[in-house]
Length: 544
Image (cartoon, rainbow, N blue to C red; front, top):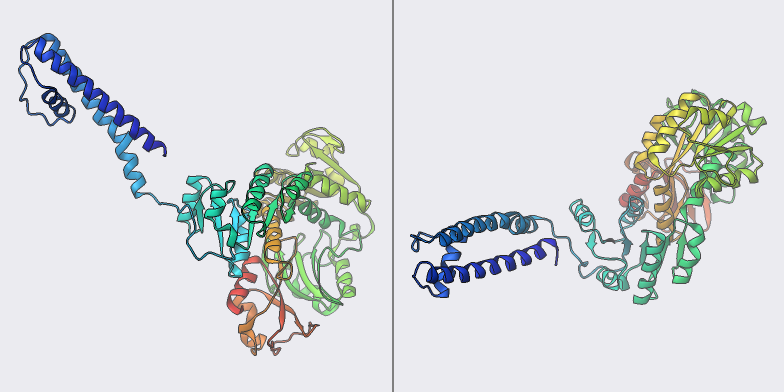
């Protein structure tokens, strides 16, 4: 029973009791003060007519003062009760009748789907992956208003409690491919226990905020426990460490001697400030630039007149020797000889992962945090220029913003950029919507926790053989393309139609990387394509 229904019951009870009391008093008054006895039914009829304002004065003409006072009180009470009925009963009833009704259970026929508990912005990346592979999904959302909003926006959602057996049964868990629990560490553990009680065979993926709590989710029976924050920290640190180590950064091995590598361009690098055509990367390094991030926007393939600015992230294919030669051209002269100083702002889970990696590669760093604690060098607010000066911003080469609050991180980006035009700003974001704002504020590289989480979950749910995800904002996907069989890549116009680049084809155990416009795919070929989320999803929809 919802709120307005409870109010309606209370209102009806009060109304009936009031009318009964007035009928009894009126019957007594007519007999005692007016000498005109009435039956209870006549008295009750008069009260009803008075309360509903439909009386025609058939019993009018009272002489006794007590009766006149009674009638006045009855008139006022009836009027008040009528007006109360509108906001308490009528309006809520009309609103519920006209409002969207969110289903509490999925329709029959749902099977091999993914049950998601509950909706968070991190779910968007997962949903995009599932949609691109025609995998059904349903969100179990306990908040009625949020469930209504999602339903009206076209999401497949039911209003139920994912922490209860009834809620998961309503989502047809027993026939599902997997269950994803991403609410909070404690609630997720409860969801895992409930799911395993319903069906032990269903794969359950749980997302934890605190890595040290992962073991409890294992004990609860989760098949996979994911902790995206350490991966986020590793990714942010790699943008610095790749410049002072032999690591090529974000790398995906495609063949025995063929890699796909993502390299950021540092300030002062040889190629910085030049157009792609002027850089001579294809001619001099013999690599294929299949895409690039320009201020957070991915271009695939990038235009020859696109300017390679500091912070541009190049996505390239080639053998390891070629890519290492190219890596030298994306680093500044200073960075080739010295590590410089790195300032890490925020020493939470992500920040500690960053400092651990910097420690491993012997890269000096300074930690800034608002709370004092082990490993914190400067205590203060990173939006205060004096704090940044105390941390050594003037001599720093990089600033890694590992702040869990997007608004604070955006403001800190503005302050750091205002204090230093040459320092590299590498920032984390909680939600994907904050990425563009941080780029606009002056960040050189931004990675969203929501993006990392969604991709990790998608990889677990769909299987590693389906998705190979760079832990940044570019995907490399292995997939079959039956609609492309027998058609040349040039005739299919893959890049123009989908925005992805076919970087290799695995055929009969061999990896083919020499793919010209005349290359034709065959039945059984597995294509390796690279591009942003929406583009790889589009490729699967068009050619899958």
